[in-house]
Structures are given as structure tokens and as C-alpha cells.
Length: 211
Image 1 (cartoon, rainbow, N blue to C red):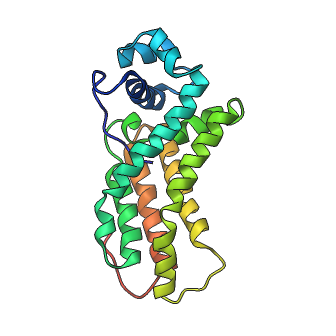
Image 2 (image 1 turned 120 degrees about the vertical axis):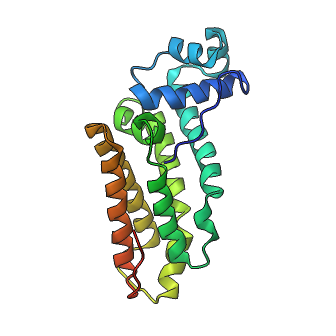
């Protein structure tokens, strides 16, 4: 998922500041390595304020996944790819938008819920489920454009809009892992470029779109 804009610690209420801190710190160093003390310091709040809003660190992780969905949904809702008239152009535009925001430090463009899922899927099922809800709900936003693109081009296939939407997220999450493994955003952008070509192949109409 995307790279929501960082907010300064002094902005918003204590809960929001803690969630902003969790978004940034967990993406940089992981959930287990992130301490309540670190979160409080980054958010500029007391430990008492933390436990007023969250029962424990796991509850913070669950809330952070939901907050990620909320903030990233707003980013994608305003993205320019929605302006295309053709549904396939909207889908390709989405992929291009994902490629465009792969820049800067790894912690700035990688996905919070993907990061947490990799780490806690076996130890914190509540966080895992919250992350899954975030990833699957985002994938579902792509389904209407995929379905319409299939209909307008008369495509009948053994794959579904839902399966292609989820595959796109699998590629993106894998691209983030490769970027982390190499310390290089370029490898992630290259993977997203392959996703673009794959989708174009599925919907091949004889047209050529510049990468």
C-alpha cells in the first residue's frame, strides 16, 4: 500500500500521534523491535496517554492497521488514475501510480500492513487479521475497473476480477520485500513494471502503451 504523508508529532490528538508514530517506526524497524517508550517519545505523549488509548502494544498494532487503511484509502481516492474514461486505462494508471510512489527511503514507500503481516502472522493473530482486512479491502477497490475492462473487451477467462486484484497486491508486496532485501527501490519499480506488462498481456487489444 501507499506512503501516506508524515504528520508532525504536535498535530492531532494523542491517539492520532501514536498511530502516526507507529506507522513510521514499525515500517523502519518492525513491530517487535518497536517499544511503547519509542512510540510515546516520537508522538510526544506520556506512557499514561498510550495506555489510555490502547490496552497494550498488540491493540496498537490492530489500530495501526485500520488507520493505515483509512489514510491510504484517502490517498488512492484522490489519485489521478480515476480520471481515465477507459477502465483498462484506470487499471494501468493505478499500476503506474504505485510505481511512481516507490521512491525515497524504504520505510517511506513500503507497506505497514505488509511489514506487520510478515512478522506477526503466527504470533499476533489479531494484528494479522487486521492487516489482511486492509490488504483485501484495498484489492477490492480494483475489482470494478477490472470487471468493466473484461466486459468492454469481451474477455471470458478462468480468472476473476478478484483474483487479478489480489495478484496485483502479491506482486506489490513481493516488490517491497525485494527492495528491502537489496536496499534498492529500483528493483521494486522494475517488478511493478512487469506487473503492468502482465496486465496489458491479459487485456491485449493490439494497442501499445508506453511503459
